[in-house]
Image (cartoon, rainbow, N blue to C red; front, side, top):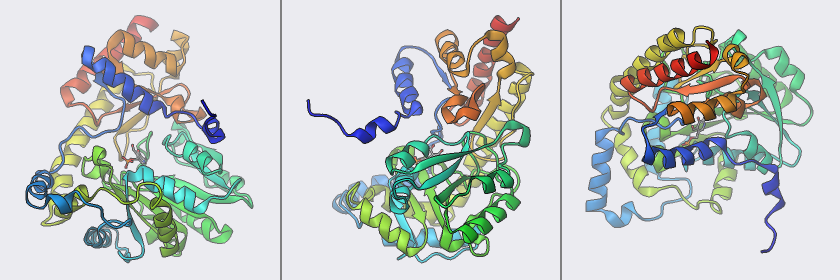
Length: 402
Ligand SMILES: Cc1ncc(COP(=O)(O)O)c(C=O)c1O
């Protein structure tokens, strides 16, 4: 066989995808409770689903045809209105918005649009694991900024300043955060924006969880003075519309960046999914989105979050965590238990799955600061199964530690 590309040796396979595949196989055989992947278990809004059925029946050719590379203009217009309503910022739907195949493609196209070989991108440690390998594929260098449970997973502005060099090209901000659920402090964003202006680098703001906020106020980076021409914002419908399998999202940014992304997208996926985009028009009409978030998504996840918080206290009293203000993850420091068990977080999660049929994600997958932690999501299982899963984790610890 002829050789494969060298660049493959620079990146690792996504551990979460590996776990998802394992889970898929295992689930067919036994009852597994998943605190693993971040895919919403709620059905999408009924209006959206009804519209898909109607589109397929009444206009199958249009619904299954190609659209332009930037996506449907009518959807981009609705997105611009929605962003104005929620965040008070105006975007030109013709120039400053591109529809992407999920946030993942938004991240990929952004990095390939802005990075040259050796450019540095600062990310937090721990952070979402979709960034580091994509940065490396785009020939960039990953620079990490550690955060920990002791400071509520908030980054330190002074440590950020120390990491900025002549090669700094971008900083990736994620809020609400995955894996920690923390909402970024406004004063950090203010410092970040000032630095981006002063040192001339991009802020890539991953707003995947912008609507999944339980307490407090999340930031919208573009609303800070001077931020607009430095900021590229990644959005996804996977979380807020519960349609991760349809692969739809959008990115906003200065027109030059959106143009660059379009140029690359032409050769990657050509155009986004047309059927899902037409159905999303209904998501934005007649208050469907607001109602779905207010009456279904937020109350369901808030109940699950509160339950999981109390169960972590009950079954893992020596663990340290921060109750997430948004998103749908607890990042739990279980070093106390791991020391007594003489195991690391990866071995712990393997054994937990093998012995108790519960999936948790090893914290070290999210960066070296994640060692000794586990990520537990409350998005995939209903309350009674969260209760059962946490009881199993408690029993598993007890059998080892005492
Ligand atoms: C922070 C963050 N960004 C981006 C994504 C990508 O999501 P998608 O490609 O489904 O839009 C995810 C998915 O879990 C995420 O957690």
